[in-house]
Image 1 (cartoon, one colour):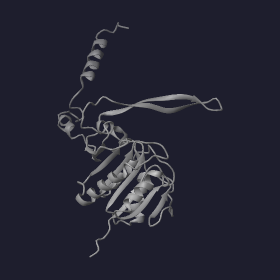
Image 2: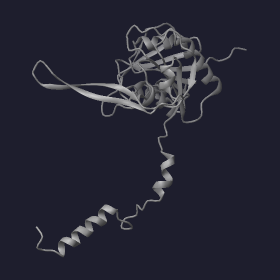
Image 3: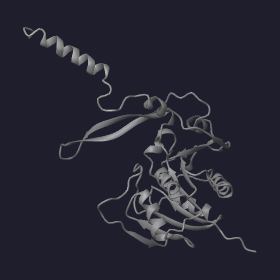
Image 4: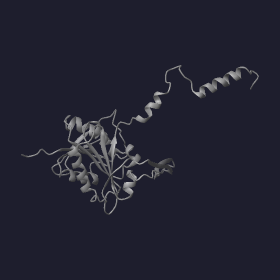
Length: 282
């Protein structure tokens, strides 16, 4: 009896010709039948953007043998939506893998990442999904350390599945030898951003985003700690952004019109009454 190979959708945000997606294709071909739908040009930092109000184009290309490949004129999320609706025609693939991204998507970076947003969209569609990222922006980045972990993590997800509404954010450190895998929480960290003012050849000002990534989170259970200490980090992510812990407090507030006034409003009313009783003021 021959077991049916899993169907695998590969997406990314660095574009269909990026070295990272080539590595992901090669590793996924060892596991199942691969279909690639990726942007026709780099789409880093697009987050969960979708294309509205202009045409989307998708064209089949032949870059690697034994792989169905399509380049898309839209965003990473557009790629997933088109894959599900037009390529797979509503029959979901067994897994969606995104990346391997050039650069980390740990901590707050997940909100800006096209790589992770594509994986999130896969999870929204009901597909077990993983986003892979590596701490190297270089075009000739060496993904050799990532390869065995990419395969092992993908096989575990195919074997065990993921809870509904959950996906995995996987990041790899740029080290000589990855020590192993750590299951982590997202670190409380962010970019301290600056906008450098520069001048173009026409003597007009423009701004270039720069910054430093800062973390005040001292926990040893975070993705930032794991990567700093030579481990690959796996953070389970959910797209339900409800702050459930805030619901009880909000339920104690008086939102009904005319039922309650804030201390600030009461103070303003008091000031108005004082002014009316002293018409000579001012």
